[in-house]
Structures are given as structure tokens and as C-alpha cells.
Length: 318
Length: 245
Image 1 (cartoon, each protein chain N blue to C red):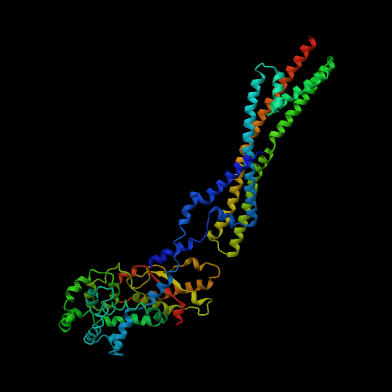
Image 2 (image 1 turned 90 degrees about the horizontal axis):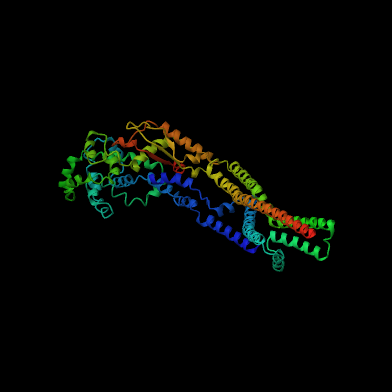
């Protein structure tokens, strides 16, 4: 055997290996698939959904002038008491306008300013409030009464214009309001009312079925589900059993399709039996709560897919 | 929200498995690793043999062609013998010729070629010498071809063994993780199949080369025997002519 043949063979194999390890084109596309591992996005969603941003402030601001009157408002007997509220609340809006949101929206619908300025400052407090599950739902319900004062306002606005010089341009701004859809979804639940006058707020935009369902509306639904959710407190690893359920509703509040668990794969992993039972119970809870009571406002948008996070920690009050 | 929902299945499916060949080798079981190493060595060795034989056989054939031309050109056989024996015979046919001529010369130098008996035994001796040298030369040329043959026939089985072992391991992995998703099994199966791929990679060239070389050598063998027959016929005619003279 000649030495050259060994060398030849060795170099051939080395070259082949080099091609296989570094340069084989077949393996390239698979490597590109790896980057999109973005699993860290769950937490922020849970926070957002739980946060009833606008209402707490509204409550607080109103709570200062009158602590108890809030329940009274639910009765909706007097259109007049609400008026002072918006005005009382109106002063706060001016400070928020400096926040990123366009000043038009802040001023335009007087009820609206209350929720709008809040979102910007509130994101910070949210996480704390998230812990207290019971509260958000209540809040979600309360805003409605508060908003009711709004509908009658078309007339009131004019009055207010005279009262508050800062709102003179409101009429013009109201027209502009129709244009920006982004801020409206939040206003929708609050401004919209069950009473016929709702026609007025609807004209301002909340009726767009393409608008996303706001957090407070979700919380309104969540509360109803959580009331029915019988969660096993003693389940293993209970703090990690955040269940995400996906479903959509008909305008009358019934389920449009069967609720689905988003993370179906996890249900069947070994060692996740407790998650599975939690997920199943969450699904049952949705089914039990089925004819949902929908928040006032446009009902068509509930046809959208809703994904709710159910966190046992919140259920148990932290 | 949409973003995270769509990110979930993506994140789940894109388990961090590296499927490059080197990673496949590294994450293999040690038996599979041994099988792979064996196959790589076999491939290396068989390719070395292939190159060696390729060069050697081609050279032998071209030398043989040249020698036959010289032999049948009508020149003096004694001169040809002197030339070859000084330089040393380089290829089987020259070795054959030199062996026969040497036997002839020695016999004639020592005066053994006397009478009918002496002539007959000289022819027998030359035939013997030529047959022996053919065998020896062919043996020299055929050395290592057996290795090619066995690599060609055995290495697929060796690779298959590695594959079976690797797949056994990956099924064990299924059993232990209780997860039948393809992501659990796929790396093991890929690494196992890699062993079969190596076995075939070693076997295919070995088999092809073995067939080619044994064909070439068979043809060379036929030529050598033909030459030996012709040469002994030539010699016996010469001897008969000398005796008649």
C-alpha cells in the first residue's frame, strides 16, 4: 500500500465530513426555525386582562365627593346628580392630556375623559390590583351606572359648554371622535347605556364590531365564569395552573362555540394531571355560566374570539 | 394577544434540537457511536485500498500492454530478458517472463537439456515456474480486496445494528417520558438512521470497487495464463528445433 492512497482517502473523508458538518444545504432551513421561541408573553397578558383600569379611578374620584352615592346611581333615578360628577371629574382630565393621548379624545365626551386619562397613569398600579380578583368585576359593573349620565348628555353638553368654557369646542371634537377608533373600545362599555339614549354614544363609534373587546368587558365576563369555577384549591402546584380558555359569544350571551383550552398540549403531558383537571373545570365553568350577561353596548362584537386567563392565585385572593 | 397565541404553538414545536450531523453523532448512545466510528474507519480503509488498487492495476495493465508489444515485436528474447532482469521486473507478465527465462538459462547453462527426458522435464519445470509466479503475482495484486468485499457486505448490517440500537433507545425515551410526540422520538431516530447512512456510505463504494477490481484482475489473470501458454509453446518449439538440428 502506498502512503499517497492513505492521504488521499483521509483527505476525502475529511472533506466529506466538513461538508456534512458545515455546509450541507439541507440542514440550513431547519436552523432558521428555531429563533421564534417567545414564551415569555403570558404574564403581561394576564396583567392587562385583570386590570380594570378606568373604573378604579372613576370610583375614587367620585368616592371623594360622595362615598355612598355610588350605589344610588345604579338606581338611575336622577339624571341631574350625574351632571355634577362629570364636571367634578372634568377638572382631572386637563392634567392627563399632557400624556401621549390626543387631547381631543380627552375632552370630547365628558364621560369618556374619566376612563381615558386613567389608562396612561394606571398601568403602574395595575399589577397590585390584579391580585385582588373580587374587585375588578364589581368595578366592571359599577361603571355602567356612572356612564349612564352620559347618554342624556347631548343636551347636557350644550348646557355644560356654557358652564365650562373649556368644553366649548366639544361639539366639533365629538365629530372628530368618530375618526380615532383606538381609544373608543374602552369608552364603549362605559358610555354605552341600556337605555334608548344609547343611540347617541353609539353614533360615536362603539358599535364597530371589529373593535377589540376591552379589558373591563372581559373582566365582566370573567367574573361570571369565576363564580362558577370550582377550583381544587389543594391541587398540586396550584399557583402555576393558569388556564386560558378561548370561546366566543352570541349577541344574546349564549356560547357561540364550545369553549376550548388554549394550551391543549399541556393537558396531556405527563405530570400535568392537575393542570388538566383545572383546565377541564375552567371549561365546565364557562359552560355553566353559559347564558352570559353581557355588558351594555354593542353586542355583536362578542362574536370575536375571547381568551380569558384564569389564575387560581387570583381566585384565592392572592 | 394574537401574537402570543400564535407564538405558543411555535414555541412548543421548536424544541432546541440541533440536527447537524456532528450533533447527531455527539448525542448518540455510546454503542451507536462505536458503530459509527467503526464504519468511518472501514470507509477510510476501503477508500485507501481503492485508491491504491486503482493506481496499481492501471499501471500493471499499461505495463503489460507495453511488454506484450515488446515481446511480440520480434526482438531477441535474451536481450529483453537481460534488460528486465537488470532493472528488476515491474509487473506480473515481466515477472513471469523473467522466471521462465531464468529457469531456461540455468538449465541450459548446466547442460541439463540432454536427450528427450531432459527436454521434457525442462518444459515441465518452466510451466511450473510460470504457474507459481502467476499465482504469486495475482495474490499480490488481490491482497486487501477481501477487505473491500467484506466491508461491502457487512457494513450495511453493522449500520443497521446501530440503527436498531438507536431506535430501541428512542423508544425507551418514549416509555420513560410517557410522551409520544414526535419531538421526543425524532432526534433518536435521526441519529439511528445516521448509522445506517454511514454503513451504506462505506458499503456502496466498497462493493463497486470490489466488482471492478475483481473483473480487472480476472481479465489480467486470463492474459497472464494466455501469455504463459504461448510462451511455453514457443519454448517447446525452440527446444524441438534445437534437438532436430
